[in-house]
Image (cartoon, rainbow, N blue to C red; front, side):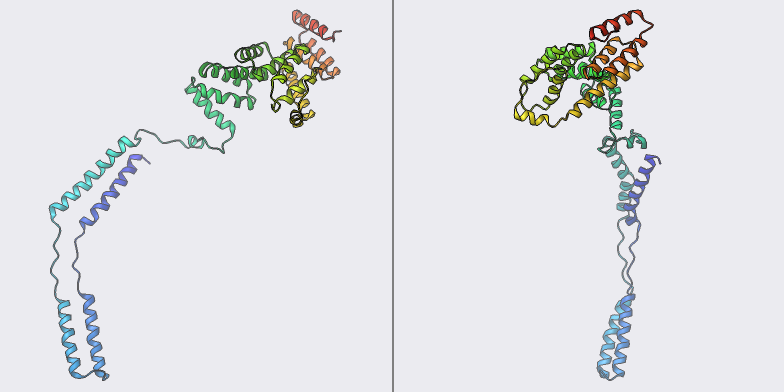
Length: 365
């Protein structure tokens, strides 16, 4: 229904409520009710006289008094004065014209006459705590399409995209966050982490560059240091990886929540972690060896899945073979070597690089 039509109906109702009392004429009240009472009293006097309750003189006096009152009640009342006609007309004009104008004058500056109806679908997208995370992300993305320079919006969106597994979109969001919200070591490290996740857990050259930029801004950035150690491990430089991670533990407080993860990484590359305090040992118990192994295996499986779709990545194949060897799964390393050679068999240069890398790993042949 048209909004203005509804307003018109409401205005008519309001005006009618004002004019209705003005249009009614005052009716003179008749004395019908009083007459009935007095006639009943006369009949009661007759009954009392017949019953011997009162004497004849008393009955006559009562009849005279009741008759006088009955005549007074039966007399035609004087007409009541009607309100002044001009005053009534003035009030009617104010109600008919002034009331709608006053309402319109208030609505135009305070209301939204140009605002169209809010579609039902849009109402269902209204933000509340019960909506799925995907719906909320869609709303933020729609906002950022219209406001691409909203750095705070990109900063909020990026980690959520990573949580949803949309790593390529998270990389773009972190880049926009750096561009529009300002550069920082935290954002550079977060960008490097997203790049690593997008590569299936492999610290690519691009990701490594971001971690190095983060450390240039803040030498104590935990995330950047950890992933640079992981990059060294993936490149076969296990001694350098252990050195990076040992340096992190040496500067970390005893209750640092990431200490168990770094300790497990050092053990993985065959290094020796520095002695830990009793508090740190207690914190390490919160992460089981099974959980640590599951985390590492998940990264390796993601890398293997990516290489099945893109077998041209020689560096990725070498990292996969190296990972299986570190995990003590030589059969899988040999199988990955065969898959790698088959994937690059038609490219002589890539095959050469692969065989050279396998030789350095001690798995040639």
